[in-house]
Length: 547
Image 1 (cartoon, rainbow, N blue to C red):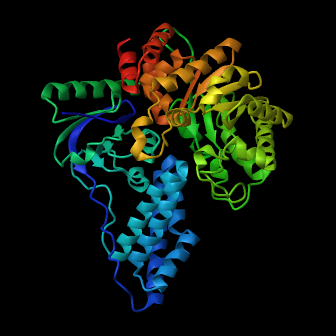
Image 2 (image 1 turned 45 degrees about the vertical axis):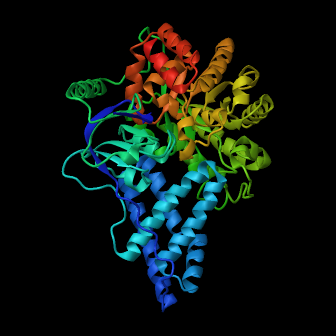
Image 3 (image 1 turned 180 degrees about the horizontal axis):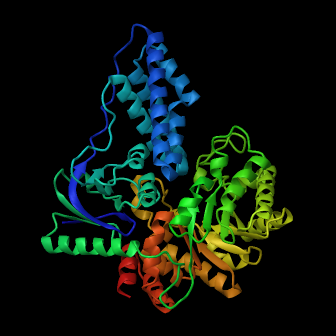
Protein backbone atom coordinates (compact mmCIF):
# COMPACT_ATOMS: atom_id res chain seq x y z
CA UNK A 1 0.00 0.00 0.00
CA UNK A 2 1.30 3.44 -0.91
CA UNK A 3 0.37 6.65 0.93
CA UNK A 4 1.25 10.14 -0.24
CA UNK A 5 1.95 13.46 1.40
CA UNK A 6 4.36 16.37 1.09
CA UNK A 7 7.98 15.28 1.14
CA UNK A 8 10.64 17.19 3.03
CA UNK A 9 14.14 16.69 1.67
CA UNK A 10 15.43 14.05 -0.70
CA UNK A 11 16.41 11.20 1.57
CA UNK A 12 14.92 7.75 2.09
CA UNK A 13 14.48 5.62 5.17
CA UNK A 14 13.23 2.14 5.96
CA UNK A 15 12.09 1.11 9.41
CA UNK A 16 9.26 0.06 11.70
CA UNK A 17 6.55 2.47 12.82
CA UNK A 18 6.56 3.91 16.34
CA UNK A 19 3.63 6.18 17.06
CA UNK A 20 3.64 9.24 19.26
CA UNK A 21 1.35 8.74 22.29
CA UNK A 22 -1.98 10.55 22.24
CA UNK A 23 -2.29 13.93 24.00
CA UNK A 24 -3.20 14.07 27.67
CA UNK A 25 -6.93 13.93 28.37
CA UNK A 26 -8.81 17.12 29.10
CA UNK A 27 -8.67 17.92 32.85
CA UNK A 28 -12.02 17.39 34.60
CA UNK A 29 -14.26 20.44 34.47
CA UNK A 30 -16.02 20.14 37.81
CA UNK A 31 -13.03 19.75 40.13
CA UNK A 32 -12.43 22.59 42.61
CA UNK A 33 -9.68 23.58 45.08
CA UNK A 34 -9.95 24.51 48.73
CA UNK A 35 -6.89 26.78 48.82
CA UNK A 36 -6.68 28.96 45.66
CA UNK A 37 -3.50 30.74 46.81
CA UNK A 38 -1.62 27.45 47.21
CA UNK A 39 -2.95 26.28 43.83
CA UNK A 40 -1.79 29.51 42.19
CA UNK A 41 1.70 29.05 43.66
CA UNK A 42 1.81 25.42 42.50
CA UNK A 43 0.75 26.41 38.99
CA UNK A 44 3.23 29.30 38.77
CA UNK A 45 6.00 26.88 39.68
CA UNK A 46 4.92 24.44 36.96
CA UNK A 47 4.86 27.21 34.36
CA UNK A 48 8.34 28.38 35.40
CA UNK A 49 9.70 24.83 35.32
CA UNK A 50 8.35 24.22 31.82
CA UNK A 51 9.81 27.52 30.63
CA UNK A 52 13.22 26.63 32.07
CA UNK A 53 13.08 23.16 30.52
CA UNK A 54 12.29 24.58 27.09
CA UNK A 55 15.17 27.05 27.36
CA UNK A 56 17.53 24.21 28.28
CA UNK A 57 16.34 22.13 25.34
CA UNK A 58 16.84 25.11 23.04
CA UNK A 59 20.37 25.70 24.26
CA UNK A 60 21.25 22.05 23.59
CA UNK A 61 19.58 22.02 20.17
CA UNK A 62 20.91 25.32 18.76
CA UNK A 63 20.07 26.73 15.31
CA UNK A 64 16.46 27.10 14.19
CA UNK A 65 15.32 24.79 16.98
CA UNK A 66 16.71 27.12 19.61
CA UNK A 67 14.71 30.05 18.26
CA UNK A 68 11.51 28.00 18.25
CA UNK A 69 11.98 26.66 21.77
CA UNK A 70 12.91 30.05 23.19
CA UNK A 71 9.66 31.39 21.75
CA UNK A 72 7.77 28.56 23.47
CA UNK A 73 9.51 29.32 26.77
CA UNK A 74 8.24 32.89 26.56
CA UNK A 75 4.71 31.54 26.06
CA UNK A 76 4.95 29.58 29.31
CA UNK A 77 5.52 32.80 31.23
CA UNK A 78 3.39 35.16 29.19
CA UNK A 79 1.92 37.66 31.71
CA UNK A 80 -1.46 37.87 29.95
CA UNK A 81 -1.89 34.11 30.04
CA UNK A 82 -0.68 33.96 33.63
CA UNK A 83 -3.24 36.58 34.70
CA UNK A 84 -5.96 34.56 33.01
CA UNK A 85 -4.84 31.37 34.75
CA UNK A 86 -4.77 33.11 38.14
CA UNK A 87 -8.26 34.51 37.61
CA UNK A 88 -9.63 31.07 36.81
CA UNK A 89 -7.99 29.46 39.85
CA UNK A 90 -9.30 32.24 42.07
CA UNK A 91 -12.72 31.35 40.72
CA UNK A 92 -12.32 27.80 42.03
CA UNK A 93 -10.78 25.85 39.16
CA UNK A 94 -7.83 23.52 39.57
CA UNK A 95 -4.49 24.56 38.14
CA UNK A 96 -4.77 21.89 35.43
CA UNK A 97 -8.22 23.08 34.35
CA UNK A 98 -7.23 26.76 34.51
CA UNK A 99 -4.20 26.19 32.29
CA UNK A 100 -6.26 24.11 29.87
CA UNK A 101 -9.00 26.76 29.53
CA UNK A 102 -6.73 29.82 29.40
CA UNK A 103 -4.35 28.36 26.84
CA UNK A 104 -7.20 26.95 24.75
CA UNK A 105 -8.96 30.31 24.60
CA UNK A 106 -5.75 31.96 23.42
CA UNK A 107 -5.18 29.17 20.88
CA UNK A 108 -8.62 29.76 19.37
CA UNK A 109 -7.81 33.46 19.04
CA UNK A 110 -4.50 32.72 17.30
CA UNK A 111 -6.15 30.33 14.85
CA UNK A 112 -8.63 33.06 14.01
CA UNK A 113 -5.78 35.42 13.16
CA UNK A 114 -4.44 32.95 10.60
CA UNK A 115 -0.97 32.90 9.03
CA UNK A 116 2.05 33.05 11.33
CA UNK A 117 -0.07 33.41 14.46
CA UNK A 118 -2.12 30.30 13.62
CA UNK A 119 1.04 28.19 13.73
CA UNK A 120 1.82 29.58 17.17
CA UNK A 121 -1.43 27.96 18.34
CA UNK A 122 0.07 24.48 18.01
CA UNK A 123 3.15 25.59 19.93
CA UNK A 124 0.94 27.02 22.67
CA UNK A 125 -0.98 23.76 22.90
CA UNK A 126 2.27 21.88 23.43
CA UNK A 127 3.25 24.23 26.27
CA UNK A 128 -0.14 23.67 27.92
CA UNK A 129 0.29 19.90 27.70
CA UNK A 130 3.70 20.12 29.35
CA UNK A 131 2.40 22.31 32.19
CA UNK A 132 -0.61 20.04 32.81
CA UNK A 133 1.72 17.02 32.84
CA UNK A 134 3.86 18.74 35.49
CA UNK A 135 0.81 19.52 37.60
CA UNK A 136 -0.57 15.99 37.39
CA UNK A 137 2.79 14.31 37.90
CA UNK A 138 2.80 12.33 34.63
CA UNK A 139 5.32 12.37 31.77
CA UNK A 140 4.64 14.95 29.10
CA UNK A 141 3.62 13.49 25.74
CA UNK A 142 6.68 13.15 23.60
CA UNK A 143 8.83 10.97 21.40
CA UNK A 144 8.64 7.29 22.46
CA UNK A 145 11.80 5.61 23.68
CA UNK A 146 13.22 2.68 21.73
CA UNK A 147 16.34 0.56 21.74
CA UNK A 148 16.20 0.19 17.95
CA UNK A 149 15.77 2.69 15.06
CA UNK A 150 12.22 3.54 13.96
CA UNK A 151 10.05 5.82 11.82
CA UNK A 152 8.20 8.28 14.04
CA UNK A 153 4.52 8.71 13.14
CA UNK A 154 2.37 11.42 14.73
CA UNK A 155 -0.57 13.70 14.15
CA UNK A 156 1.94 16.52 14.36
CA UNK A 157 5.17 17.18 16.20
CA UNK A 158 5.80 19.94 18.70
CA UNK A 159 9.01 21.96 18.29
CA UNK A 160 10.28 20.73 21.65
CA UNK A 161 10.01 17.15 20.40
CA UNK A 162 11.54 17.73 16.97
CA UNK A 163 14.44 19.78 18.29
CA UNK A 164 16.06 17.02 20.31
CA UNK A 165 15.29 13.91 18.29
CA UNK A 166 17.88 11.19 18.69
CA UNK A 167 19.04 10.83 15.08
CA UNK A 168 20.60 7.47 15.86
CA UNK A 169 17.09 6.17 16.52
CA UNK A 170 14.64 8.31 14.51
CA UNK A 171 15.02 7.37 10.85
CA UNK A 172 12.23 9.57 9.46
CA UNK A 173 9.17 11.61 10.40
CA UNK A 174 5.61 11.10 9.20
CA UNK A 175 2.77 13.41 10.25
CA UNK A 176 -0.90 13.63 9.47
CA UNK A 177 -0.99 17.42 9.75
CA UNK A 178 1.29 20.19 8.58
CA UNK A 179 2.61 21.48 5.31
CA UNK A 180 6.02 22.22 3.80
CA UNK A 181 6.42 25.35 5.96
CA UNK A 182 5.26 23.88 9.28
CA UNK A 183 7.73 23.68 12.14
CA UNK A 184 8.02 19.93 11.64
CA UNK A 185 9.06 20.47 8.03
CA UNK A 186 11.43 23.34 8.79
CA UNK A 187 13.20 21.53 11.60
CA UNK A 188 13.32 18.28 9.62
CA UNK A 189 15.17 20.13 6.86
CA UNK A 190 17.46 21.82 9.35
CA UNK A 191 18.41 18.45 10.87
CA UNK A 192 18.46 16.51 7.57
CA UNK A 193 15.74 14.10 8.69
CA UNK A 194 13.63 12.68 5.85
CA UNK A 195 9.98 13.53 6.43
CA UNK A 196 6.59 13.27 4.76
CA UNK A 197 3.95 15.59 6.22
CA UNK A 198 0.27 16.06 5.50
CA UNK A 199 -0.35 12.30 5.14
CA UNK A 200 -4.10 12.03 5.64
CA UNK A 201 -4.03 8.31 6.40
CA UNK A 202 -1.20 8.55 8.95
CA UNK A 203 -3.62 7.79 11.81
CA UNK A 204 -4.17 4.33 10.30
CA UNK A 205 -0.51 3.34 10.63
CA UNK A 206 0.26 0.98 13.51
CA UNK A 207 3.30 0.25 15.64
CA UNK A 208 5.58 -2.33 14.06
CA UNK A 209 4.47 -1.88 10.43
CA UNK A 210 7.45 -1.56 8.08
CA UNK A 211 7.60 1.76 6.22
CA UNK A 212 9.68 2.81 3.24
CA UNK A 213 9.76 6.61 3.41
CA UNK A 214 10.74 8.43 0.21
CA UNK A 215 10.88 12.13 1.05
CA UNK A 216 11.85 13.06 -2.50
CA UNK A 217 8.69 11.47 -3.92
CA UNK A 218 6.52 12.32 -0.90
CA UNK A 219 5.46 8.66 -0.57
CA UNK A 220 5.17 5.98 2.10
CA UNK A 221 5.19 2.31 1.13
CA UNK A 222 3.57 0.26 3.87
CA UNK A 223 5.02 -3.26 4.28
CA UNK A 224 7.11 -3.02 1.05
CA UNK A 225 8.47 -6.14 -0.64
CA UNK A 226 12.10 -7.15 -0.20
CA UNK A 227 13.16 -5.92 -3.64
CA UNK A 228 11.91 -2.40 -2.81
CA UNK A 229 13.68 -2.48 0.54
CA UNK A 230 16.95 -3.57 -1.08
CA UNK A 231 16.69 -0.81 -3.70
CA UNK A 232 16.00 1.77 -0.99
CA UNK A 233 19.07 0.70 0.98
CA UNK A 234 21.19 0.95 -2.19
CA UNK A 235 19.97 4.52 -2.78
CA UNK A 236 20.59 5.42 0.87
CA UNK A 237 24.20 4.27 0.58
CA UNK A 238 24.65 6.20 -2.68
CA UNK A 239 23.38 9.36 -1.00
CA UNK A 240 25.74 8.92 1.93
CA UNK A 241 28.69 8.53 -0.43
CA UNK A 242 27.70 11.62 -2.41
CA UNK A 243 27.26 13.78 0.70
CA UNK A 244 30.76 12.92 1.90
CA UNK A 245 32.34 14.33 -1.26
CA UNK A 246 34.10 17.71 -1.50
CA UNK A 247 32.04 20.89 -1.24
CA UNK A 248 32.01 22.80 -4.53
CA UNK A 249 30.19 25.92 -5.78
CA UNK A 250 26.74 25.45 -7.26
CA UNK A 251 27.03 24.54 -10.91
CA UNK A 252 25.06 22.64 -13.55
CA UNK A 253 26.52 19.75 -15.50
CA UNK A 254 27.43 22.08 -18.37
CA UNK A 255 29.23 24.58 -16.13
CA UNK A 256 26.39 27.09 -15.72
CA UNK A 257 26.84 28.76 -12.31
CA UNK A 258 23.94 28.80 -9.89
CA UNK A 259 24.71 30.41 -6.56
CA UNK A 260 23.76 28.23 -3.59
CA UNK A 261 22.97 30.42 -0.61
CA UNK A 262 21.67 29.97 2.93
CA UNK A 263 18.50 31.15 4.65
CA UNK A 264 19.44 32.38 8.13
CA UNK A 265 17.50 33.86 11.03
CA UNK A 266 20.40 34.67 13.32
CA UNK A 267 24.00 35.83 12.91
CA UNK A 268 25.31 33.07 15.20
CA UNK A 269 24.26 30.43 12.67
CA UNK A 270 26.46 31.89 9.93
CA UNK A 271 29.53 29.72 10.49
CA UNK A 272 27.47 26.55 10.38
CA UNK A 273 26.12 27.59 6.98
CA UNK A 274 29.63 28.27 5.69
CA UNK A 275 30.76 24.83 6.87
CA UNK A 276 27.93 23.25 4.85
CA UNK A 277 28.99 25.05 1.67
CA UNK A 278 26.85 28.19 1.59
CA UNK A 279 28.26 30.64 -0.93
CA UNK A 280 26.58 33.50 0.87
CA UNK A 281 23.18 34.35 2.29
CA UNK A 282 20.07 34.58 0.15
CA UNK A 283 17.70 35.48 2.98
CA UNK A 284 18.63 36.90 6.36
CA UNK A 285 15.49 37.36 8.44
CA UNK A 286 15.82 40.35 10.75
CA UNK A 287 12.67 39.68 12.79
CA UNK A 288 14.63 38.08 15.66
CA UNK A 289 15.86 41.56 16.57
CA UNK A 290 12.32 42.88 16.94
CA UNK A 291 9.88 40.13 17.94
CA UNK A 292 10.62 40.03 21.68
CA UNK A 293 11.34 43.75 22.03
CA UNK A 294 8.99 46.24 23.67
CA UNK A 295 10.45 49.01 21.53
CA UNK A 296 12.39 49.05 18.28
CA UNK A 297 16.11 48.26 18.72
CA UNK A 298 18.42 51.20 18.20
CA UNK A 299 20.57 51.74 15.13
CA UNK A 300 23.60 50.70 17.16
CA UNK A 301 21.99 47.52 18.48
CA UNK A 302 20.96 46.48 14.99
CA UNK A 303 24.29 47.38 13.45
CA UNK A 304 26.19 45.11 15.85
CA UNK A 305 24.14 42.11 14.74
CA UNK A 306 24.50 42.95 11.04
CA UNK A 307 28.27 43.38 11.36
CA UNK A 308 28.54 39.94 13.00
CA UNK A 309 26.65 38.41 10.08
CA UNK A 310 28.52 40.21 7.31
CA UNK A 311 31.94 39.40 8.76
CA UNK A 312 31.20 35.70 8.31
CA UNK A 313 30.90 36.15 4.53
CA UNK A 314 33.79 38.36 3.35
CA UNK A 315 33.56 39.03 -0.38
CA UNK A 316 30.28 37.09 -0.64
CA UNK A 317 26.69 38.13 -1.26
CA UNK A 318 24.48 38.60 1.79
CA UNK A 319 20.83 39.43 1.12
CA UNK A 320 19.05 40.96 4.12
CA UNK A 321 15.28 41.28 4.25
CA UNK A 322 13.90 44.37 5.91
CA UNK A 323 11.64 43.73 8.88
CA UNK A 324 8.73 41.52 7.80
CA UNK A 325 6.15 42.08 10.51
CA UNK A 326 2.73 43.52 11.16
CA UNK A 327 -0.74 41.97 11.05
CA UNK A 328 -0.08 38.24 11.52
CA UNK A 329 3.25 38.99 13.26
CA UNK A 330 2.17 41.98 15.37
CA UNK A 331 4.67 44.14 17.21
CA UNK A 332 3.32 46.40 19.93
CA UNK A 333 5.52 49.31 18.83
CA UNK A 334 4.77 48.82 15.14
CA UNK A 335 1.16 47.81 14.63
CA UNK A 336 -0.96 46.20 17.33
CA UNK A 337 -4.38 46.73 15.77
CA UNK A 338 -6.50 43.68 15.05
CA UNK A 339 -7.45 42.79 11.48
CA UNK A 340 -10.06 40.30 10.31
CA UNK A 341 -7.80 38.89 7.59
CA UNK A 342 -4.20 39.63 8.61
CA UNK A 343 -2.63 37.62 5.77
CA UNK A 344 -4.10 40.23 3.43
CA UNK A 345 -3.58 43.15 5.76
CA UNK A 346 -1.04 45.73 6.81
CA UNK A 347 2.15 43.70 6.79
CA UNK A 348 5.66 43.75 5.34
CA UNK A 349 6.57 46.92 3.48
CA UNK A 350 3.01 48.22 3.94
CA UNK A 351 3.41 48.60 7.68
CA UNK A 352 6.99 49.88 7.35
CA UNK A 353 5.72 52.75 5.20
CA UNK A 354 3.31 53.61 7.99
CA UNK A 355 6.28 53.75 10.38
CA UNK A 356 9.01 54.99 8.09
CA UNK A 357 11.18 55.97 11.07
CA UNK A 358 11.70 52.27 11.88
CA UNK A 359 12.50 51.46 8.24
CA UNK A 360 14.95 54.38 8.03
CA UNK A 361 16.73 53.26 11.19
CA UNK A 362 17.06 49.69 9.92
CA UNK A 363 18.40 50.77 6.54
CA UNK A 364 20.84 53.14 8.23
CA UNK A 365 22.13 50.36 10.48
CA UNK A 366 22.55 48.06 7.49
CA UNK A 367 24.35 50.71 5.44
CA UNK A 368 26.78 51.42 8.27
CA UNK A 369 27.42 47.70 8.80
CA UNK A 370 28.00 47.22 5.09
CA UNK A 371 30.51 50.06 5.00
CA UNK A 372 32.54 48.48 7.80
CA UNK A 373 32.72 44.96 6.36
CA UNK A 374 33.82 43.27 3.15
CA UNK A 375 30.62 41.37 2.36
CA UNK A 376 28.52 42.27 -0.67
CA UNK A 377 25.39 43.59 1.05
CA UNK A 378 22.04 43.42 -0.73
CA UNK A 379 18.83 44.56 0.99
CA UNK A 380 15.26 43.72 -0.03
CA UNK A 381 11.76 44.77 0.92
CA UNK A 382 9.13 42.20 1.96
CA UNK A 383 5.56 41.92 0.66
CA UNK A 384 5.83 44.19 -2.38
CA UNK A 385 2.63 44.21 -4.43
CA UNK A 386 3.21 46.80 -7.15
CA UNK A 387 5.94 48.78 -8.95
CA UNK A 388 5.32 51.97 -6.99
CA UNK A 389 6.28 50.19 -3.76
CA UNK A 390 9.47 48.94 -5.38
CA UNK A 391 10.38 52.44 -6.52
CA UNK A 392 9.70 53.82 -3.03
CA UNK A 393 11.83 51.25 -1.24
CA UNK A 394 14.81 51.26 -3.59
CA UNK A 395 14.95 55.06 -3.64
CA UNK A 396 14.86 55.27 0.15
CA UNK A 397 17.44 52.49 0.55
CA UNK A 398 19.88 54.21 -1.79
CA UNK A 399 19.28 57.57 -0.15
CA UNK A 400 20.44 55.98 3.11
CA UNK A 401 23.53 54.32 1.64
CA UNK A 402 22.42 50.87 0.44
CA UNK A 403 24.14 50.12 -2.88
CA UNK A 404 22.05 47.14 -4.02
CA UNK A 405 18.33 47.27 -3.23
CA UNK A 406 15.64 44.85 -4.37
CA UNK A 407 12.29 43.40 -3.45
CA UNK A 408 10.63 40.11 -2.64
CA UNK A 409 8.09 38.63 -5.02
CA UNK A 410 5.55 36.93 -2.75
CA UNK A 411 2.19 37.80 -4.30
CA UNK A 412 0.86 37.18 -7.83
CA UNK A 413 0.61 40.88 -8.67
CA UNK A 414 4.35 41.45 -8.21
CA UNK A 415 5.16 38.35 -10.26
CA UNK A 416 2.94 39.49 -13.13
CA UNK A 417 4.42 43.00 -13.02
CA UNK A 418 8.02 41.87 -12.47
CA UNK A 419 9.24 43.68 -15.61
CA UNK A 420 7.97 46.98 -14.23
CA UNK A 421 9.26 46.26 -10.73
CA UNK A 422 12.72 45.61 -12.15
CA UNK A 423 12.76 49.08 -13.65
CA UNK A 424 13.62 50.30 -10.14
CA UNK A 425 14.75 47.19 -8.24
CA UNK A 426 18.32 45.92 -8.69
CA UNK A 427 17.14 42.35 -8.12
CA UNK A 428 14.16 40.29 -7.07
CA UNK A 429 13.89 37.28 -4.79
CA UNK A 430 10.90 34.95 -4.94
CA UNK A 431 9.45 33.80 -1.64
CA UNK A 432 7.77 30.59 -2.75
CA UNK A 433 6.08 29.94 0.59
CA UNK A 434 3.91 33.05 0.43
CA UNK A 435 3.64 33.02 -3.36
CA UNK A 436 2.10 29.55 -3.17
CA UNK A 437 -0.19 30.60 -0.33
CA UNK A 438 -1.58 33.59 -2.18
CA UNK A 439 -1.77 31.88 -5.56
CA UNK A 440 -3.74 28.89 -4.24
CA UNK A 441 -5.67 30.90 -1.60
CA UNK A 442 -4.55 28.42 1.07
CA UNK A 443 -3.11 29.50 4.41
CA UNK A 444 0.37 27.97 4.44
CA UNK A 445 0.16 27.15 8.13
CA UNK A 446 -3.30 25.58 8.14
CA UNK A 447 -3.25 21.78 8.15
CA UNK A 448 -6.71 21.43 6.60
CA UNK A 449 -5.52 22.99 3.35
CA UNK A 450 -1.90 21.78 3.48
CA UNK A 451 -2.35 19.74 0.30
CA UNK A 452 -2.83 23.01 -1.62
CA UNK A 453 0.45 24.37 -0.31
CA UNK A 454 2.61 22.79 -3.00
CA UNK A 455 5.09 24.96 -4.94
CA UNK A 456 5.05 22.37 -7.74
CA UNK A 457 1.62 23.68 -8.73
CA UNK A 458 1.77 24.86 -12.36
CA UNK A 459 0.06 28.14 -11.42
CA UNK A 460 2.95 28.94 -9.07
CA UNK A 461 5.53 27.81 -11.61
CA UNK A 462 4.02 30.04 -14.28
CA UNK A 463 4.40 33.04 -12.00
CA UNK A 464 8.02 32.07 -11.33
CA UNK A 465 8.57 31.80 -15.09
CA UNK A 466 7.17 35.30 -15.57
CA UNK A 467 9.68 36.67 -13.08
CA UNK A 468 12.49 34.65 -14.65
CA UNK A 469 11.77 36.09 -18.08
CA UNK A 470 11.66 39.63 -16.71
CA UNK A 471 15.00 39.21 -14.97
CA UNK A 472 16.68 37.69 -18.01
CA UNK A 473 15.42 40.51 -20.24
CA UNK A 474 17.29 43.15 -18.24
CA UNK A 475 20.12 40.99 -16.90
CA UNK A 476 19.12 41.22 -13.25
CA UNK A 477 19.32 38.54 -10.58
CA UNK A 478 16.28 36.38 -9.82
CA UNK A 479 16.69 34.48 -6.58
CA UNK A 480 14.54 31.85 -4.90
CA UNK A 481 14.51 32.01 -1.10
CA UNK A 482 11.44 29.96 -0.20
CA UNK A 483 11.39 26.35 0.96
CA UNK A 484 10.93 25.23 -2.67
CA UNK A 485 14.64 25.79 -3.28
CA UNK A 486 15.45 22.99 -0.81
CA UNK A 487 13.69 20.39 -2.98
CA UNK A 488 16.44 19.16 -5.32
CA UNK A 489 14.09 18.12 -8.15
CA UNK A 490 12.18 21.39 -7.93
CA UNK A 491 15.45 23.34 -7.72
CA UNK A 492 16.32 22.08 -11.20
CA UNK A 493 12.93 23.22 -12.51
CA UNK A 494 13.34 26.65 -10.87
CA UNK A 495 16.69 27.08 -12.60
CA UNK A 496 14.99 26.13 -15.86
CA UNK A 497 12.43 28.88 -15.20
CA UNK A 498 15.13 31.52 -14.85
CA UNK A 499 16.36 31.43 -11.25
CA UNK A 500 19.98 32.55 -10.98
CA UNK A 501 20.43 31.69 -7.30
CA UNK A 502 18.83 29.33 -4.79
CA UNK A 503 18.68 29.95 -1.06
CA UNK A 504 17.65 27.33 1.47
CA UNK A 505 18.19 25.87 4.91
CA UNK A 506 21.91 25.00 5.02
CA UNK A 507 21.26 21.29 5.59
CA UNK A 508 19.68 21.05 2.12
CA UNK A 509 22.69 22.45 0.25
CA UNK A 510 24.44 19.12 -0.33
CA UNK A 511 21.42 17.45 -1.93
CA UNK A 512 20.66 20.42 -4.17
CA UNK A 513 24.30 20.79 -5.19
CA UNK A 514 24.45 17.12 -6.19
CA UNK A 515 21.20 17.30 -8.15
CA UNK A 516 22.22 20.38 -10.15
CA UNK A 517 25.34 18.59 -11.34
CA UNK A 518 23.21 15.94 -13.06
CA UNK A 519 21.61 18.32 -15.60
CA UNK A 520 22.58 20.91 -18.20
CA UNK A 521 20.75 24.21 -18.53
CA UNK A 522 18.88 22.90 -21.56
CA UNK A 523 17.77 19.83 -19.62
CA UNK A 524 16.62 22.04 -16.73
CA UNK A 525 14.60 24.13 -19.21
CA UNK A 526 13.06 20.98 -20.67
CA UNK A 527 11.97 19.81 -17.20
CA UNK A 528 10.57 23.25 -16.49
CA UNK A 529 8.59 23.27 -19.73
CA UNK A 530 7.15 19.85 -18.95
CA UNK A 531 6.10 20.97 -15.46
CA UNK A 532 4.51 24.16 -16.83
CA UNK A 533 2.37 22.16 -19.23
CA UNK A 534 0.88 20.04 -16.43
CA UNK A 535 -2.49 20.63 -14.83
CA UNK A 536 -1.69 19.81 -11.20
CA UNK A 537 1.21 19.73 -8.77
CA UNK A 538 1.39 15.94 -8.89
CA UNK A 539 1.36 15.93 -12.69
CA UNK A 540 4.03 18.65 -12.80
CA UNK A 541 6.28 16.64 -10.52
CA UNK A 542 5.81 13.52 -12.62
CA UNK A 543 6.27 15.37 -15.91
CA UNK A 544 9.54 16.94 -14.79
CA UNK A 545 10.85 13.58 -13.62
CA UNK A 546 10.21 11.97 -17.00
CA UNK A 547 11.34 14.90 -19.20
